[in-house]
Image (cartoon, rainbow, N blue to C red; front, side, top):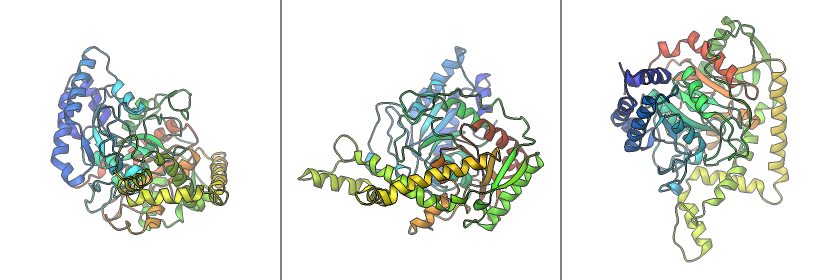
Length: 486
């Protein structure tokens, strides 16, 4: 039995049945991290001692008959979620020694169910980036090709899965930061409906956009992890109090007769021809499963990037104002308060974060608010109407997750606009608060993964996972494609 290759729910079953222990499983993944992470750089922090203690606690929990589906299964957590007693850096020098006094609700739910937190994964600083090259510490490498980016900002979480360093991972998605790295790394990623998963303890970038979600190697495992994460939290004012279904229960139900919309705008905005070929092939599989493919229009898609890059930096400018060297985090000594602010923020933030703070401060400033932020908010409302109109005709939407496969490290670091365009198919979903699922659709001629994105109405995660599970079996990506050995 090769523990590190087992699906997460299968691993949970074997642990529950006593065929192996959580301690054995956890040690296997810790050994794998030691063996390959020097090449991949998926982890910022590996909590070996804490993970082994949690594994022993999970084994005791199971011995008392208190186990659940994923009890004892290891998980990697993006370093933007607070972890009590364990450093949370957000990939930034500003927080390089910050140790939170409490767990984010998502992390608390993992521990409550007996999952084992292996450590914290690398990310673009404060989740601002699409390649994990904007981490203050080091870039993460894509295990399919170590010279390429894994995507971002949850690049460490996605890379840890495909490198077999973890069976499950948590990411966050503000404009595509779960789905885009999932696409580039050939894994499954789900951005839930805004409000479905608590944001308490998620260090804020864009408060109206941020959402935590699962990454996994299979749709079924993603559904199992969402079962743990989802639910109302009265400590999060944006959390939605509505029933949470068992997301694994619907898997396997047929989707014959499902109407799937194909937005024409998703096949025109700089889409790589090879990506288009693979995505249209995946859509053909949906048709073979009995789905009706319906052309739809999302006419304001072309304005999504401009709208997002006004709203998200504006919220970032406000959220990151707290990092001033006074209460916690980095502090540069100076002769005056103003100089201390200036030195702390100049040294603590990297160039991408500074760029977005400056942009956000500008669009919120007197004389520009009406022209930029207010106008972007109005366009956001129109984007939501576009989606609502489309969902009057179809049950789900399908299209590419990213316009290109993973690009080479360093290829776009000097061209921020080109980097921003890599999220053109994902960020409108965050602006509308919709759920989106990415699953592997195939490989390019260079052996790079391409992800298909399924988008649904609010709180349609159950349907997305149901469709994704059947499509995954038809495409056979996990069966037919394996990354190179590290």
